[in-house]
Length: 358
Image (cartoon, rainbow, N blue to C red):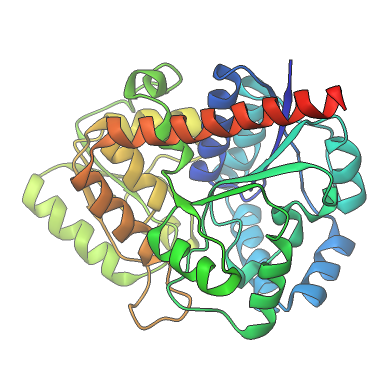
């Protein structure tokens, strides 16, 4: 059986990232491939090397320190950070832990196909060559599934040059947003297909199959915010007055821990799914939160995390999804994603057969 290796974000303590990783691996397996994720968690030396060579801002390290401080201060946040790796062990197949490029290359040697995606792995703000599969050289068959740039404006010229170089040996590229496809073409001259996030590849019934139990108690207004913004809580208060629902918060930030509302703390990815599915109303600034609200048919109120004039705004991914889901619906999106993957896997099989004959 042919073998595919995937690289994406696995260690950012995020429900959406973990669930999109699960969905992509499950779908590739269903399409007839043995499949594993390359378990990339860069060590300090690798992070510093990447920061210096990719031209990233030092504030990324500061942001990481801030997020770790929240986990250090809250027992529920620590339980969540343990629940996500437990979800991987239960539901997915991962390689040995890779702390640098050398170890990624070693773990990918037996893969016939390498896949990067999805999530914001190609966002120029935190550019990392590993997510462009540079560790494998140009001898491997490489594709990108729904990679997101997460931006609406071109990055600086030095990053454009890197992205152009790192995408040169990909056989096929798909991205998650139309804006991303347009920007990528401007940067590299390559046209990319626009296809849905991996979580769209599974049906509502399939997600129900792994979702946790409904939170106990009365019907609830679920809040899940990745950013910090007082306007979020103004909106929550409005919704509470409008609906009369109890407010249940899945905390991420220090601000959400101080909200004063009831907390659904320490939940893992399966519990996240159950909470979104069974909410009477769901208020979120999360892209994947919005997508799961749509999959489950939950009333979802979207808070925009970024100002429209913010050069690092990632609102385009929300706008793209809302536009496309209105035009096509979830079933058509799912079929588009699965057909794109099926085509790429078929092409890889053909390529491998020709290589064996020669």
